[in-house]
Length: 181
Image 1 (tube, rainbow, N blue to C red):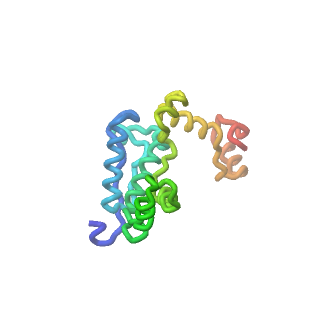
Image 2 (image 1 turned 90 degrees about the vertical axis):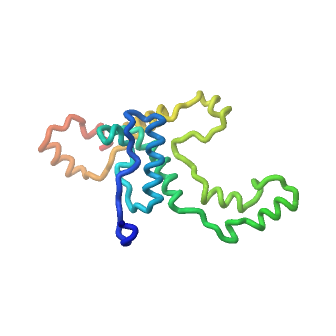
Image 3 (image 1 turned 135 degrees about the horizontal axis):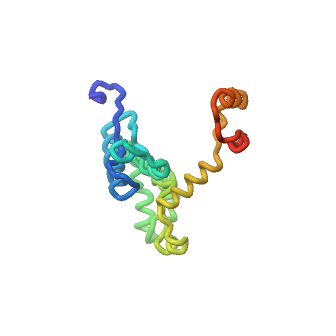
C-alpha cells in the first residue's frame, strides 16, 4: 500500500527462527530480506543478527549478515539493459577475433567492478586456496573479527569531560584507561 500511495514503508525482514547461525538462518535471512527489498520497502529493520523470532541476537551475525544485506541492496538496483550493457562491441571482438574469453576486455573489468558483489566476510576462494588456508569456517572467522573489533575499537563520541561526569555519577567498573582514553 505504501508503494501504491508513494509513501515510505518499512518492514521487519531478515530475522530468523533459527537459534544459531546455521543454514536455516542464512536461508531465512536471504529470502525474507531480498523479498522485502525487491517489493520496495524503504527500510528493512530487524534484518541483522536476530534469532529465535527476535528473542536472541548474535553479534557475529551482524558481520555475516552485512554480506547478505549488501547483496539484497545490489538486487534492488536491478539490471540495466542498454547498448553499453549488452556489450555488442566486446562480443564481436571476442567472437570474431577468436579470443576465446572476455577476461582481457576493459569492459569486463569495468562491469566486474561496478556490478559484481564482493562480500566482506564470505569465502570466495577456490577449494585449493581454502584448503591451504586451513579450511576456515565462516562463523569462526566472524567470531575472530568480532573479538578483534570489540578489543580494539573504542568509540570517541563521548568526550573525556562527559565520561568523567558519568563516572562520578555511576559505578563504572572498566577504567577509562582500558577504554582507549
